Length: 303
Length: 295
Image (cartoon, rainbow over all chains, first blue to last red; front, side, top):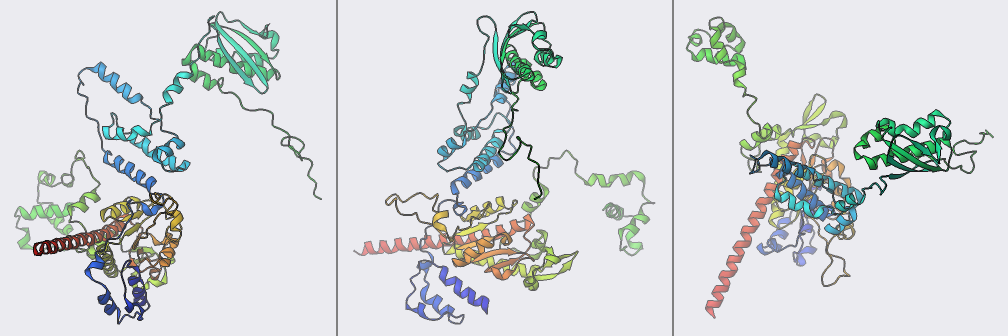
């Protein structure tokens, strides 16, 4: 009985746009439900035009974003089993190798969140942007060469300042063939000049043994050259100031590593593994009020 | 399987085995009697390995999909208990999580889970299809809500098939009760009157594929007098929604079947509406012609 009443209550109320005449004042019971129904409904009421929202994802609250994700998903599914057709000039091996290399080298970098929001005219949060870029990356990871429809869709999302950034960074040797680099560690900074030579190292005008009494520090300074086995190829002229002995030694290590990279890019993985390229971020931690030092607390008193 | 094949082979070769003894209840006995008499090379002919296709045959689609498409597609008009069972809709939840209000729909329990009576499922599913069809006939908008991770694709597909709408990632609380803020936020403002908040819409029917996680959506719909069709499992009270369908809400195949069937019914309603509209257009044109020919 209650379910029938519920039905009777729910059904007539949801039909928008019906001109219910004075009959609506009568009580709605299951017994006179059909009376009302037949009295008010005609073919015209059923077929009356009712405005609907346009987008499929209207009720998600963010329909443009959801529609975009659905579109990218559908595209990915469409090309799930895509295999590129062999190139027409497959007989010429050298040209094929060249084209395959150039095609595979292309790294897709996507627009950043702000620019992408502008492009799509949707306000994007970081997680939403990440989701979009992951879908775009999935599309870009299809076997190359990509189908033209995919390329045309991925086009507007690409970031174009990538090329300029790459060109700006290269450092060169100066007119005397010297590579200059600065190294830092913990209040010490070292200015290092590295030239082709026999293996001499001068620090603040002094010999290495004179300046660094501890063998540990001397080993730190020569570490970049030792690891890459270029000890006898280069002369180093170093000016270092600030900090203490160890700090200065490690600053020189950092500077020499960077200078060596300017001479020879290929040594990067070896130097990175040895730890000569990363600037060590550790510095003295500040003392906090209410404590004896940075971490040490005053003696704890129970009462 | 192998023994059955052997028995068939033996019988077909006219070994006069059949006429002499009563057909065995199990084929194992037949095997014992027929094997000693046959030669070794003939048994190789019907070896079980030959029945299995070679591994080189390409399997383009998963078997479930190829089977599903080979058989005729499921519509609201050819539903049967066998189909519902094949989709796993009869498997309820553990008996310890049982909601007593689902008692009329439970067939029994087995292995610690409640089994849903598919006769009821069939009836309620047909009722839900009728509701969807009639709503679509009257030009109503149907919203499919399915937010579990495996349901997203099928919700979107079902919505697209019948020109409906979907919510497949998250139901934002306030979609119905706080419409102007939630839905009006991204809507384009009125070209004539930019100050006025844009027009927002409400669905006329909601199809919920996992009501257990959508308490908020159900209460919002009830406040706005929108009927809900929902797949109610044995751990959910079916009296909370207008049109429950007692069925398993965990199996993706089952939920896909229900969503497809409801969306097919809605599409039929749309089709009928289009027919009626075309008919009315024709009648109008005829009337106009008659009028113009008169005067």
